Length: 110
Image 1 (cartoon, rainbow, N blue to C red):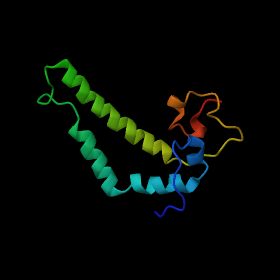
Image 2 (spheres, helix red, strand yellow):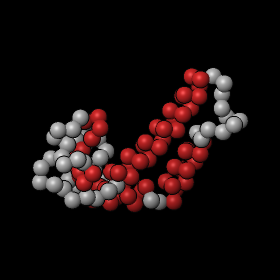
Image 3 (cartoon, rainbow, N blue to C red):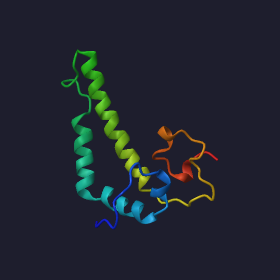
């Protein structure tokens, strides 16, 4: 995808949802077979198993944190791929940025 102009970071969530083409393009990628296979491989590689459980609590916690991180990332990508109607008022105005970074406007409390 050619870039017309450099992306200014941090990019606000409202900029993402202002362009439905971005969500549709992302949806194409995350529904593709290579992406789904990569997702399944990553999640499967960190699934807890009897052989893979360490007696060390710190190592177990790190292992489960990786699993949670993968699941969160994939869930966030799916949320970004949703096209939703934009309300007239900015729904993230009164929300803490930490919690509003991937919530589509249609799912935000009113």
